[in-house]
Image (cartoon, rainbow, N blue to C red):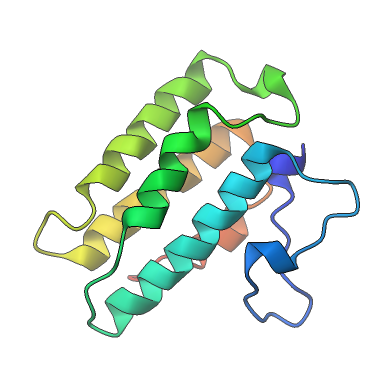
Length: 133
């Protein structure tokens, strides 16, 4: 499933999703997920620097995970939609509490939970976003 094709650049350098070319093409959902990872990395960096992160782009992307066209629509079962709702609620909580790092790590944990159930390929890449780890 192309939505699972979150490939790390060979150099380990973090690249903008528009710079990553998948020779098999990308579904709309794969691009949304890749951009979510990019925005999450920017938020993580902002939190680590003690700055106030901008969550707007991530919120916009998270809102699309139930409407973006996947590579394989059979992956979008009831469980996917329930987990997507949990993720959307987790994203809404970011920036509203007293500890942005904990809120962020909770959001990343929700991403990992969903991928364990739907598309396990990118879990190791997502885990690298955890701040407390």
